[in-house]
Image (cartoon, rainbow, N blue to C red; front, top):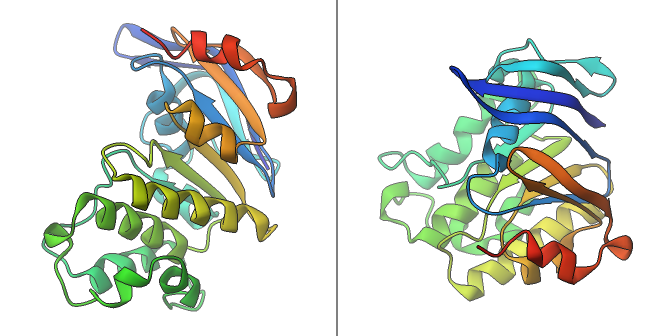
Amino acid sequence: MLSVENVNLKYGAAQVLWDVSVKAEPSKITCIMGRNGVGKTSLLRGIIGHQAISAGRILWQGKDISGLPPFERARRGIGYVPQGREIFPLLTVRENLESGYAALRGRKREIPDEVFELFPVLKSMLSRRGGDLSGGQQQQLAIGRAMVTKPSLMIFDEPTEGIQPSVIKDIGRAILYLRDKGEMAILLVEQYFDFAVELADNFVVMDRGQVVMAGAKADMVEQNVRRHLTV
């Protein structure tokens, strides 16, 4: 469904990605790993349209979306859970979830029941402001908001960062649930190997703005992957 082909990306004169290629397929989780600063988030920003790529192309469902603005990519079924969550702190939980309606464009606007099945705490906090939630609850809210957009591709940028272990398990179960529905491709950026290895079907390992390893989980040697995660 998603094919990133030989993408380069720059911030001004500084190039941060060199000929990066990544694929994400339905019913599979592709995990992008690497140390801080190797270009993982920049790659996601290029995919969702927050940063223009300087070379290469991004294909989604067979069409080149490299020049589309972020809102058009969202309307075409690309959901995004950003690093740091980025929920609206002064809006209620319900209003945060309903902000996902903007991507639906004519489709039925509703909060799917599965959001509350996966994260029941959100249902009990619908009238509470987003900024009053704990970090783990905000992360669940960010995932729920992306689910409201009814995506065919879900992109997660380090969903375990700063989250307590019990909520990390809930997030892992939610990601597996979304994969196993069989309707969605998942792209997951993660630094923690133990979390990633339980979820991923395919791995992409980055270093210094390039892909240095890629393949199915069964073909990856754990020691080689971990070598690119340690400082």
